[in-house]
Length: 143
Image (cartoon, rainbow, N blue to C red; front, top):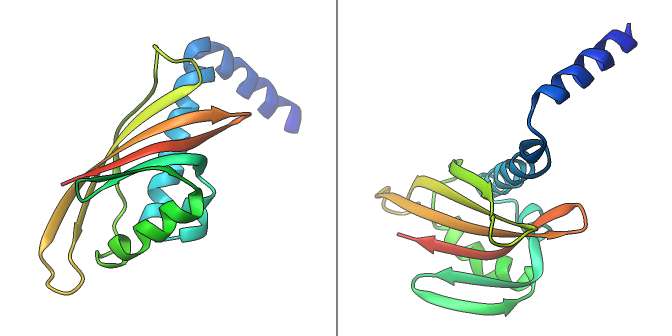
């Protein structure tokens, strides 16, 4: 019973172009995981998704060389000031100019917790491959 399933999966894998199997899907997976952690305001899940030295641009201010715990500390108040909502992954793709890097654009439609005023943000995420994982090395939050 198990053997036919594996045979079917292996045959299907051969139909997917090699570049997509190795590059595009992992970037999408990393973007989806980041979006889910963002929606849940899961600070630990966000922390483990950041590179050891990251850049964060929030409210027009860029912070560079931040450790993951500092990124999360900076984001905590911002996230908690908005209603939880799942960001939509608009695009997620590898960067052809830099091997091992990926890029994702997410649209986050939320509302202010206190006033209920709708808010829309664009999250621009740059991923850097560290071993088998794609970690966020740059996060820009644009109104």
